[in-house]
Image (tube, rainbow, N blue to C red):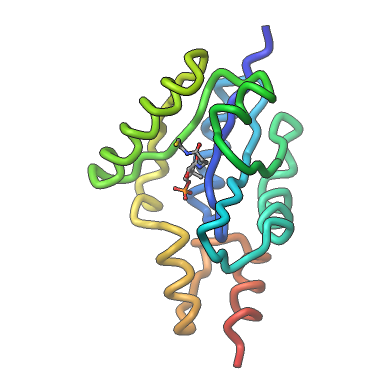
Length: 160
Ligand code: PNS
């Protein structure tokens, strides 16, 4: 049986923390689908196409990783892709409550789905897409925190 996992998220934009987690996750399965959730209630900084391009540039060297986007429920997308594992990152205790609720809800919606939590490299634990967007907005140096392609796109987005 092929073990397929989904690593879902907004990835707006992907950070080195996301990359680190995807590379750790893929070592545990046969195939990893990094999937961008399309949320009609959110106004993302980058389009789905841009985010897919960032992810495939940063992680596309590994043939076991594929990239996708989905609308609607993760539980349904997992069923459609025959994935039985969801991978999520836990950076701090503050992540736990939301992640715990989401894991249980996803299992309720799809009883064949298990959520696995991974911790990122310790020097990336404080990193989040929202902090990256905020720092970029005010001209902060993001070297080492995001892929150079993302860094370039952020500079272009906030250039006046
Ligand atoms: O990177 P994020 O924003 O923390 O990711 C959250 C995400 C996209 C994984 C979560 O919001 C999600 O799975 N959205 C799809 C809708 C869904 O299935 N929600 C959870 C059960 S109601």
